[in-house]
Image (cartoon, rainbow, N blue to C red; front, side, top):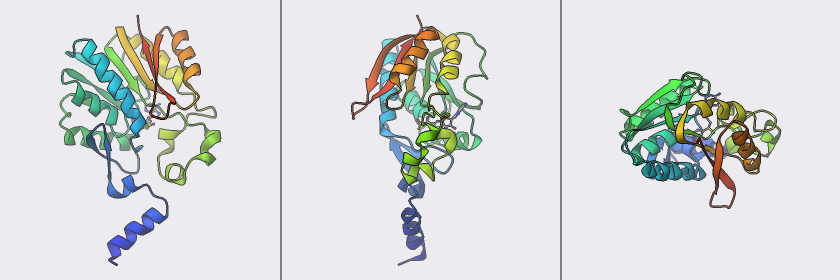
Length: 232
Ligand SMILES: C[S@@+](CC[C@H](N)C(=O)[O-])C[C@H]1O[C@@H](n2cnc3c(N)ncnc32)[C@H](O)[C@@H]1O
């Protein structure tokens, strides 16, 4: 057995995710580079992308502006830009490492001219004025208390900043929704992924922050996974 092959097998035996070993993951029919420093895109996140494209077409599909908060590999921003040819937007992340990979993915999928990647904390780099048809986010939502329950592939290899949101797992939602509301155009939508069992609480926060929760979409396992909240 070659040295290279033995090394790859050892990495997998240490529970390193296959996607970090191969360096790629498919998402929404597109190819994304992944590596230490970004979350591996999950199939359930395709739900958010699918719904955004549907809503974008309902809005006429042209001159649509979006922001993807916590862009990671860029899978949401790039897939939405590819699915809605008349859209342009931003991918924001607090991690420089993730933004480097997101830029490569935009380039690889031909969306680099329509997405600007910015290093920032949530939406604080944008003035609190209506500017976006869509605020999109798959934020970190795992509870620190639940860390021991995660598979080793996730706990030992995926970045903490992409996984955890305080003791409850819910801490990021209020500041994110509070910052999203004033930046949405009237009729625009916030689409956000939520963890299992979090949808009611997050829906309540959206209502308190002045948005109208329109739907909670279920993933293929029947778990409420994507909140759609509109600004009237
Ligand atoms: C669950 S990952 C999602 C990555 C990608 N959007 C996806 O769906 O696969 C969450 C991302 O949010 C970023 N993040 C965490 N806290 C943030 C903050 N306060 N502001 C901006 N980005 C943040 C992390 O670095 C990570 O890339």
